[in-house]
Image (cartoon, rainbow, N blue to C red; front, side, top):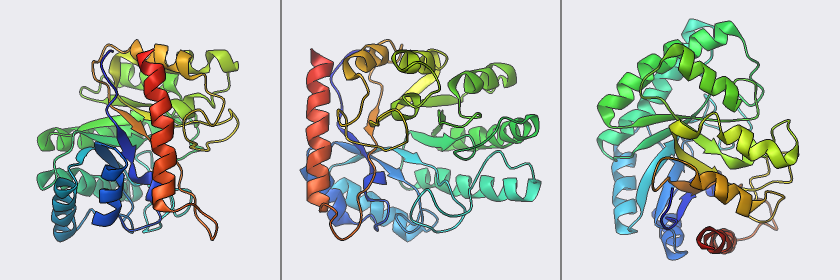
Amino acid sequence: MQGTVQRLLSTYLFVSRKLTPEILKQIAGAGFQGVEIFCTRSHFEYSMKPEIRSMADALESSHLQLVSMHAPTSRDHSAMRESGTPLSICEVERVRRVEAMDELKRVIDVADDLPYARLILHMGGSREMADPRKRDAAFSTLEHLILHAHDAGVTICVENTTSEMGDPAYLRAFVDETRLTGLRFNFDIGHAHLAELPEEERLEKSFSPLRELVSSVHLHDNHGEKDEHLPLFDGTIDWPAAIKILRSSPQTSLPLVLELKEKTGAEAPTVAEQLAAARKSLDRFELAWSA
């Protein structure tokens, strides 16, 4: 993988707020070229056509490309991903699994009015234990979703997480054994840095099983202990080593999406200040990339 880095930002940075045309203008003004929208209904009401069309207009007027959507991780309208009842493709109970699948189909259907290339999806919750019944449930759900997404021109990318079912080796074995055609991976480098391996082996051993099927990447940093979603170079990830690993991807122009955690509260930085920090970290990353 060669080429320049396209400046892409996940709207997870502002997930507790309504995603407004003003925020999109500020994202564009900070030098970003495209976004991944994190789907919670309070952030972006993805099930309503007028909202979708308004978002399409706002993105166009800000000259921002919608490169991907991140699937909702809870089944209520909660703003933060850590709260609410989990929405999972691994639900063993059929009724709950169908509810989750229907919600994800609504996100895919956004592409009818607002085209995008990839839907980023987690294999269950953050503590999902490996279980043959959950594996079968995930297979059944993904079989339907991949077909639905294909018709919409969307590729489903399952993300590596810190759970057993989100482990890269588990994910690759799942694809190889089920022979699900069309399923791809989103490599989350921050999650990989939390793997229960020696620190210097974490990124390579996480990327290696997924390498040939990685279609997008999430960039963020942490200190190797918890999922902090920090700006790049603010944690302990060895970014020159990480870049070497990412460059080994067979896909050219792999989308690298900056996915930072929102800072909230009375003393939280402004939107402009959080965007400035995001841009600064990406400036450093670009220098290292081109070195």
